Every structure is written in C-alpha cells, then in structure tokens.
Amino acid sequence: MTVGVCRHGASFREWGSATRLRGRAARRKTVIFIGVAHPPERRPARGRPHVSNELGDFLRARRADAALEPPARDGVGRRRNPGLRREEVAAAAGISVDYYTRLEQGRERHPSDAVVDALARVLRLTPDARAHLARLRGVSAAAARGERDDGSAVAERMSALVDAVRPNPAYVLDRLSNMVAANTEGLALYAGFGELPPEQRNTCRYLMTDPRAPRIFVEWEELARGAVAQLRAANAGRLDDPALRALIEELRGESPLFAEWWGGHLVERRRASIKHLRTAAGEVARRYEVLHLPEEELRMTIWLPGA
Image (cartoon, rainbow, N blue to C red; front, top):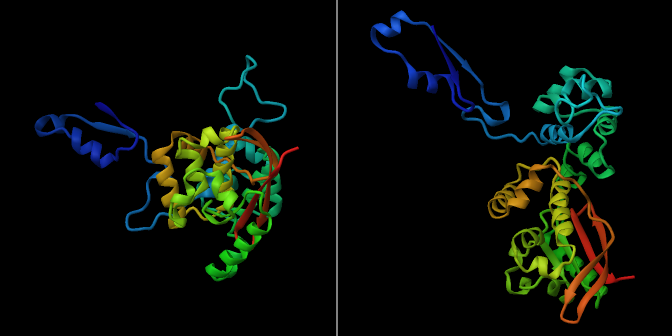
C-alpha cells in the first residue's frame, strides 16, 4: 500500500493524475491519498462572483491577537499557541461554537448587538474596533438609503469650508482618502500634489509610496499607519467596491508596509493630536484636528497652530 500526501493548494484530481500508477503495478497496489483542501475563502466556486467575508476576516485577525483574562496556559505555564481558539472565544462570549464558527466563515453575517458587545469584550476591542465590528453588519446609513448629493455641489460646499479657515492648512478627504477639496495651504502640505490631476490626489497613497512623505511629517509612521487603519474603518462592509479594491491592490504591490498593516485589519478613526512638520523655517508643531461628516462619507482635516 502506498500513502500519498497532497500538498496544500493542490486538488486530489491534480495530484492523483500526476502520481497515478499504471499497468500491472497499479492493479497490485492500493493508493491512499491524504490531502489538505483549500480553505473556503481561497476556493471560490466556479462561475460565482467573489464575495468578501470582511466580518469573518476581522474576527480571525482579532482572535489571533487576543488573550483570556486570566490567560489559559499549558502544564508548564506557557500558552500553547498565540491568540484564542474559537472554542475559547465562544465560551467567553456566551455563544455556541457553531454560531461563532459560522460568523468567521461568513455563513452568518448579522450578529445582534448583544453578540457584538460580547465579542468586543472577549477580544478586547478598542472603541474604534468595536464600532467597526458593528458597521460590518451593513453599509453606512447614506449608502443604505442610496442617497448621494451631486458631486459638484459637495465639492463647492467643501471648498467654501476649507477657504474659511485660511491661513490654516485644511483639506477634505473622501472614504478612499482622495482629496476632494483643499485650500492653498492644505495642498502645499503634500509636496507635488498641486502638480497631480485632482483625481490622483490620494493621501493614503502619498503617505505609503511617496519618498517625500517621511521627510515632511516627523511622525510619518504614525500618520501612515493611521491612514491605513482609517481606510479600513471608513469602508466597513464595502471591500467589494471596485475603486477600493483597485487602490488596495495597487498599494499592496507598491508598499510592503501597507500590505502588512492592511493584512492586520487595523481600525482607527482619525482624531485630534499634535503633529510636527519639517518646513523651510524648521520643525513646527501643529494641532491636527479632524471633523467627520458621516452622511457625506467625508472628513475635514485642519492643521492649527500647535500648543
């Protein structure tokens, strides 16, 4: 008897045809194939469109980082594996293992508020991450209603807003971090932005791929990491959006850091903080203020004089 082990990612048919015994030897031997099938998310059904499972992906990522309190340990005082097992999460959250498994596998996509609260507690989610988990049950209110203001009208209103706060640098970003409006000072913060067509002015792309970004922003890594986390938070439940998918694939290919941070399911909404800029006059401190406009899926950033 011959025992064959199918490599991960190869189907039984593919592996069997490559190692099939022929002639009399085939009739004299019994061959047992032991294989590892594709994970469900990597083996889409033929002829069916790809359906994202962002809720399940997010839960798995947070489970891999979580720990019980008090921590579960083996006989020698060490945790066998990092993170939590599905059984541990389910037990601590007071739900069945089967139900939690369905959540991770995308077979259940609408947990109740009580379940969301329980999972947030067990996985020790930050307030931003807890809100993100809740949003993954559906799209934003404006998107659900199918309401959209005329693009030119929105741009006109946003331009008036950023001009009103001059000479402080200010700009407005959409959910993809495209700059839809900016005053002269805000545009000048991102060296070279003014030379780009308006549709190519994306701050997340700039922070992750433009070599000038680390030279301008003293806390560049913090800003860049936050931009990736904001991109995910602003697009909860919308990973199938073609424009978003195109941006993600582009940045994955150009920035290993983006690929790492995006794969980690970081979630964070931009908030006020003190940032430092390198200018021709030297390093200056600025208070970074962010105003979120959820109905329009926009956010306005103002750089005020620092303390």
